[in-house]
Image 1 (spheres, rainbow, N blue to C red):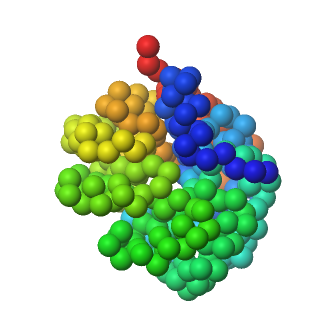
Image 2: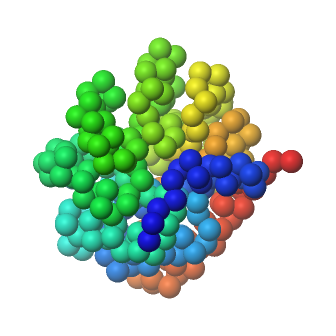
Length: 271
């Protein structure tokens, strides 16, 4: 199935006065078949794009929930090749944007050019390499440009305006805003500093931005959208539903559908 670009997605949402809701899951958590069914339920519940992680042994940007998801995926037999097959099946199911969040060792070991060429053939929209700073990313930027894949980078509260400007010149898709200092995980509140960061980014770039890390409730979605974000990304809260219902797949599907539907509804704001 051909892909919808992030630009087309944001244009549609702006026309409908909505923000983007983007769920993150680890490919193969808790196993290949269940994970694929989860992604299909996410799509069917109306999410605007998908963020998919490749399981990795040292996910330094991720908290306990995603680390445990990585372990479950490995224990079920997931490999890089199976991740590519997983992406192929997801793309056959949906045209919405698909972004990857992974770590540089996976890309480097596979071969940068070969990795991006395979993603291009699968119509993957974007890649975010969590442990690769933009100053050291020229090789992957060259590959992403060659194969028409957008490269996404993370901005945090410690990112200066000067560095933000440089990131804005090379980023594709959207700027990923980390709402907290530290790793991924559920938080009770959106920090005031995050809202100020969103406003500062908006003053310095016209690019779309989406906020992740710590977003888990409807009120968080509304708060970051009200502050100027164009979307919200949620991972740990969804992964926790998987963890808490490992012996009952139907309950996983039911709860994830209910949760993501409510989170998507929270993006419909704004009169």
